[in-house]
Image (cartoon, rainbow, N blue to C red; front, top):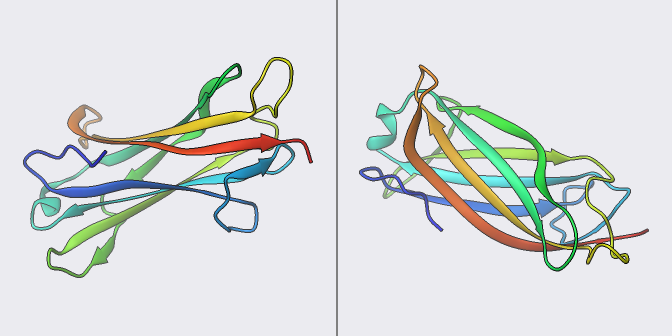
Length: 148
């Protein structure tokens, strides 16, 4: 789902799972760390009026029996930490990497399917820490955890 930035326009969040070597992956060994990479953008000139910070959270929901939980820690990204994107339309690009520790999610067993759908939410706070109505959501990808 695209960012809900009325009256601002934006794209993403786009989500990829990266293995310990940084390659995209959807099958992860339980003894490996992995990264949930999140990218989004906000179009200019509206992006220039934003202050504050972005909050990025990743969650895993089991498909079948298993765990449902937040992955890693909430990431806080200062609105001023962006990469310019040439237009049209010009935009400000953002990225957050959520580190997930080895052993966080279970592989297939009698109590777990070992298959998880990821969901990511990107929200915005003003400089005073109050939440705004700017938000973006991504559902997926699906990953499988396996015993090495």
